Image 1 (cartoon, rainbow, N blue to C red):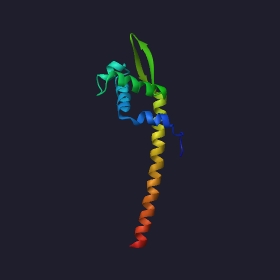
Image 2 (spheres, one colour):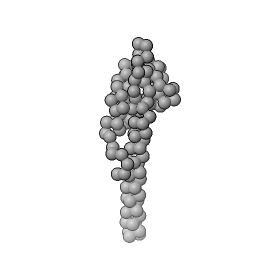
Image 3 (spheres, rainbow, N blue to C red):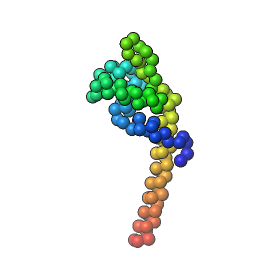
Image 4 (cartoon, rainbow, N blue to C red):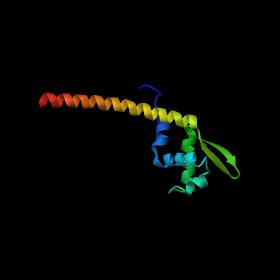
Length: 112
């Protein structure tokens, strides 16, 4: 596969739909806290905090103290790395599927 090697922990982190929604909210809202994020998600503040911990461990978000809470923002360089990996894997699968299609078409022509 060309491009960056796949980082399984990073993929696992972005594989969860709640975490992807959190990233969207952080990007469109210019950051946020666990409390503000939980107001827009169907999970508790504690669940949001756990999800933020996962995103933080893979470097997708960073936190800064903000009063009694922590304000989270997206690490755009790490997000770009994740997007590059997704694109690279997508391209590899596109190529595989094209080869499979050509093989199937050849078999069909030979049988028909």
